[in-house]
Amino acid sequence: MIWRTEIPYKVNYFTWLLAKQAILTHENLNKRKPNLCSSCYLCEEQVETVNHLFLHCKWTDQLWQMFI
Image (cartoon, rainbow, N blue to C red; front, side):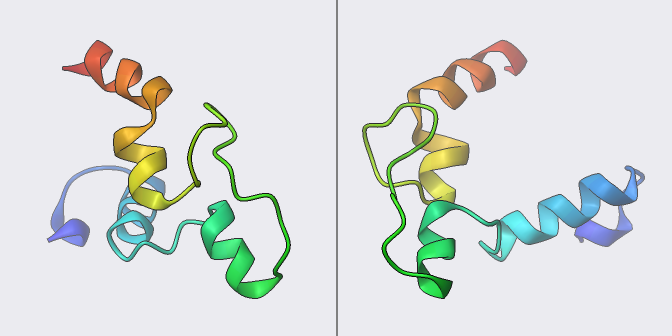
């Protein structure tokens, strides 16, 4: 479904990575090289996961509110 839309390829690819939770967040980078700081770069309050970064962070929540 992602690849059948009429949006730029870069947006399709980013959406596909997001759906597979393969975006390089601190959580995913720690799987490759442990001992990295895992707090969110934007709010510095929680662990930076894909869900937190794109849905639950207070800064991205404000961004979503601007679009909605």
